[in-house]
Amino acid sequence: AALVTVLFHLGEMATATQSLDEATFEVLGAELGYKIQVVSPEDEERELLDSFDIDLEAELEAEGDADLEKRPAVVTVMGHVDHGKTRLLDAIRHSNVVEGEHGGITQHIGAYQIGFDHDGRQRRITFIDTPGHEAFTAMRARGAKVTDIAILVVAADDGVMPQTVEALNHAQAAGVPIVVAVNKIDKEGANPDKIRGQLTEYGLVPEEYGGDTMFVDVSARQNLNIDDLLSAVLLTADAALDLRANPNKDARGIAIEANLDKGRGAVATVLVQSGTLKVGDTIVAGIAHGRVRAMFDENGDQVEAAAPSRPVQVLGLSTVPRAGDTFLVTDDERTARQIAEKREAADRNAALAKRRKRISLEDFDKAVAEGKVDTLNLILKGDVSGAVEALEDSLLKIDVGEDVQLRVIHRGVGAITQNDVNLATVDNAIIIGFNVKPAERVAELADREGVDMRFYSVIYAAIDDIELALKGMLKPEY
Ligand code: GDP
Image (cartoon, rainbow, N blue to C red; front, side, top):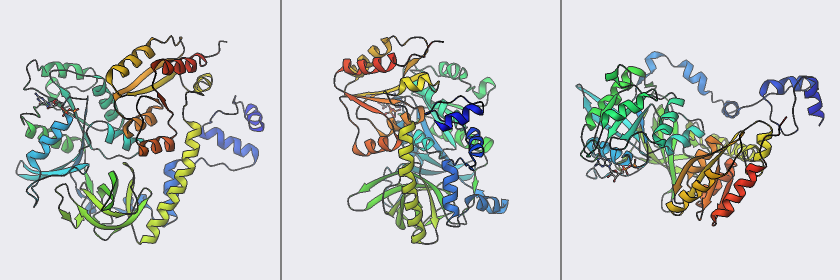
C-alpha cells in the first residue's frame, strides 16, 4: 500500500497488483532511496556468462570480415495442416540427401542437410524437419532465432487457410523471408493462380506480379519442381540475406529437439550456428551439460566435427535440453556444470514469477478490469473432432458482451502437446482439454510456464466455467 501511495504522488495511478513499466520502477526506486534495476532474461543470461568470463557479444564484435565464411541457409516448412508439409520435407530429403554408408536410410533427428549442384557450385541447405509451427513457436517462445527462410506450403486445390495466415504472421513477425510452395498441382481442381491472388492480400506479392516473393508450383507427391523450389530458396537467401559465420572457433548454437533414450541417455539434436562443434568438446545447453561423447548426422553416421548450419545429434549430455535452448562450448566440465546449475536455479525462480503473472480463468476478470486484456484466448483439444467442434460452437455462442472477446486460437484432436503449451505461452491463452490430458513432460512445461490448463469430460461444465469467467469480467462502467 505504501508503494501505491508513492506512485500516486508521482502521478501514477496504480493498484497493488498491477505490473509497472521499467521507467516507473526506476523513478519509484529513486523516490524511496533505492537504486532499482530492471533485469530482463537476456541481461540475466549475459551476466551469468559474464561471471564465467564468457562474453559472446565481444566475441562477435572482434570477428573481422576475414573470419566469416558462407554458411548454408536454415529453412523451416510451414503451412496449414494437410497441405503437404511432411510430404514435401520427405520429397526434398530423398531428392538430395547425401547418401550415407547405410545406403541412404535416413533417420529423423529433427533436422537434415542436403547438398546439391546449383549453377556449377556445390550448395547446401539445412531443413528443420519438424513441420508446422512447432519448431518455430517453441523456439520463438524462448527468443531463439533459428530459421533464415520459411517455405510456406499452400495446397493449390484448397487455398489460404487459418494456419497459413498464422504461419506467415509468425514468419513476418520474426523478419524471416518467405518462399511460397504452391503444392498439389497434380490434383484436379488445383488453381495456383488463386493462391497467388490470395497471398497478395497478405503482402506476399509474387515476383511475376511485380512483387518480391518467389512462388513455385510443386507436387510433393510426384516430386515435381522440387529443384525449382530449392533454387528459389537459394536465390532468396543470396538476394536478401548475407549468411556467414566464423567456423574457426568454439561452437555455439541451438538445441532443436531432444529425448531420453534407454540405452544412450540424453540424445539432443543441435544446430551449430557459429564455430565448429567437435567430439570431446564440453558443452552446456540450457540446463544440460556434458562432454560430447559422439555425434551423428541424419544418416546415422558418426561425425567428428560439425560446421555452421550443420545439425547433429549429440550424445553425452547430463539431461535433456529444451527446443530453443542455446548451447555453447566451455573451457572445462566444471564451468559447464556450474552454468547449467545456475540456470536451473534461475528457471525455478522465473517459473514462480511467471505463474503469478500469466492469465488464469479465475483472475481473468481482474485482468480485464485492470485494462490488461480484452480477449480470452482459448486452445481446445479433444479426443474426437466432433466433441471439439461442438465445444467450439457452444463457446462461440456465449454472449460475451461488448468489451471483451473470446477467441479460439487453436483447436485439435489428440493429447495436449508441447506445441499447444508453447502457443499458449506466446498468445497468453488457456488450454481446454476435453477427455484428453497432456503427457507428463508437457504438464511439466505448462507448470513451468504458468499456463492454465483445464480438463473436462462434459461440454456443459466447460461452457459453465468459461461463462462464469466471462461474466465476472465485464469492464466496470463509468
Ligand atoms: P501436412 O499436414 O501439411 O504435413 O500434410 P501431409 O504431408 O501429411 O500431406 C497431407 C496429405 O496430402 C497426404 O495424404 C499426402 O499424401 C497428400 N499430399 C501431399 N502432397 C501432395 C501432392 O503434391 N499431391 C497430392 N495429390 N497429394 C499430396
